[in-house]
Length: 199
Image 1 (spheres, one colour):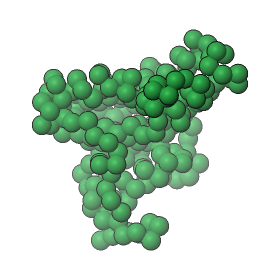
Image 2 (cartoon, one colour; image 1 turned 45 degrees about the horizontal axis):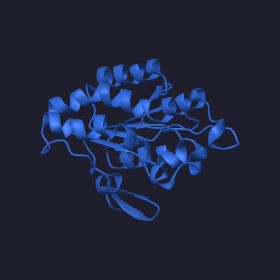
Image 3 (cartoon, helix red, strand yellow; image 1 turned 135 degrees about the horizontal axis):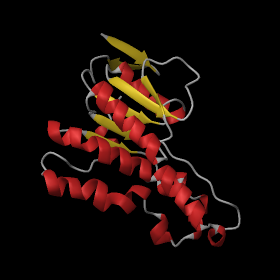
């Protein structure tokens, strides 16, 4: 059995048995990712601050994952409802900075951007990774670059810093420590290009 999207054939059983969490999954790229997993037979949970405008087969969790409370709500519901997760897609994020360049960006604005773009991944991974470790497998994917979704004033920073992704800031904690602690044969850093199925 197969379904069709954008004239491409999709295996309706490709992700059968997989539990997938997509943050910011109610619209835009997040919705497209969630729909793709649904078409492939996965059980999908999506998060957002607002209720989705369209009906969806995904399990919706209304939460602001930029806050500790919101992330904790998502973790609790995923563990209680799905008893763990197989794939986490970190899609949520935002950008806010005043005009005027790097010198105008205050500590509060930096903190807001870290809250929106870094800490959701840190908190959700910390809460959900143990279930992956217990099972011995799992996939965590973070989309989009720091310069695209965090501070628009990043262009005012030196080029060598501008090329870095926001997850690079947390890489020693989110990617390198897991293989080191639990065995590189089971937990490896992976790019979204390698992990997503080809159409």
